[in-house]
Length: 282
Image (cartoon, rainbow, N blue to C red; front, side, top):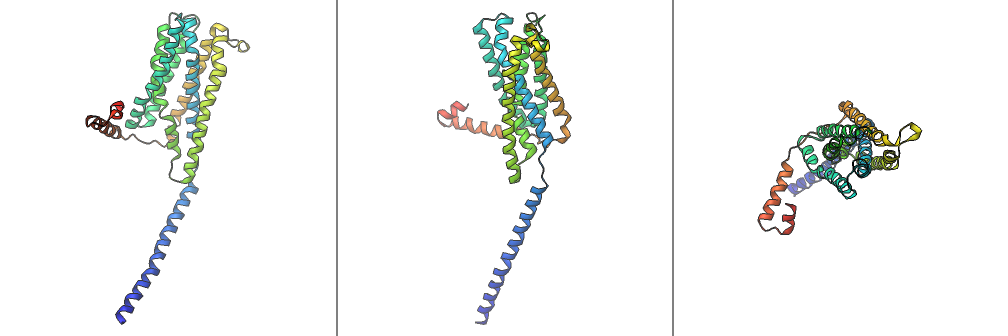
């Protein structure tokens, strides 16, 4: 009987001690988490630059995309069907290059890819602006096609799949406060896209074909003026993005192991009779 009472006493003591230790640990974790949340501040500077580069890139893209067909037809003499086809190819290439742009970011990091591809994009817009000058449009037709069908699609393919994720990296998702801030960031991100589209189609595309008499821009200089604005915007936002490098949270690339693993799995599935879905993926 005495031995049984000793066992019961030990069990009661354990029941008392264990909840106290668990409670202390949970309270410590809660206080640590609340401290991290209270210390965190929204990185307005890096976020503002990310939104700015997306705004300028979309404004430049839609200025060229919205005026390219008319320019090819009216200024360079392409047939309407050919001009429309080349404009569609331009859009297709911009989206096609997003896949290698995203894979490259996985391998070497988003920051490096954004800087490199934005530089190529800016050069493409500058060359396009030079090529549409009223005094040399036909002579510089090849330069225009190189800028709009090669450099700009390649450049936007590295910006488009990475810039939004790079902005989200600056905020992080360790706490609920950061997760809420990410949601707000994406709302502003898509708003910047819409503002860029609105300015491009609502004003700059009209300048290409009608000029801007109030600013002394003649009709035959409309393309040059609008494309020059697009080039200046891209160069300015790229310079600001690079200048703020020290303010960024830069996540290094993790290589292509994940992509290669997925590719091997798909190939194995197709080779093992995985059905038409596996073959379509290949």
